[in-house]
Length: 69
Image 1 (spheres, rainbow, N blue to C red):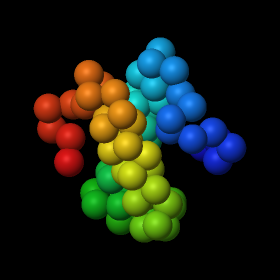
Image 2 (image 1 turned 45 degrees about the vertical axis):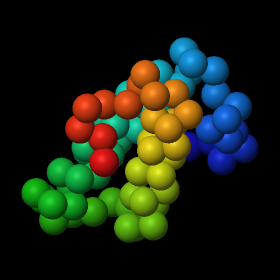
Image 3 (image 1 turned 180 degrees about the vertical axis):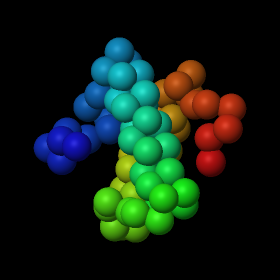
Image 4 (image 1 turned 90 degrees about the vertical axis):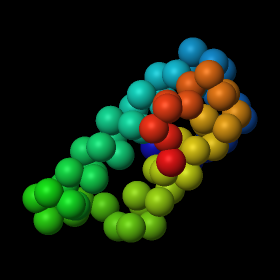
């Protein structure tokens, strides 16, 4: 994750790409944590991924998935 860039700096095409990347990464970490009981990141790092995804979906509502939490 590039900590130098803020969500508001992302253009719509790169926002779409980042949302896809975040969803894939979140699903992967959910599986590692809940199914395999082998977490690779801390809860705080996972929360940061979720917060970034939520912010992107709020900034660009067209990117929000129906099952977004």
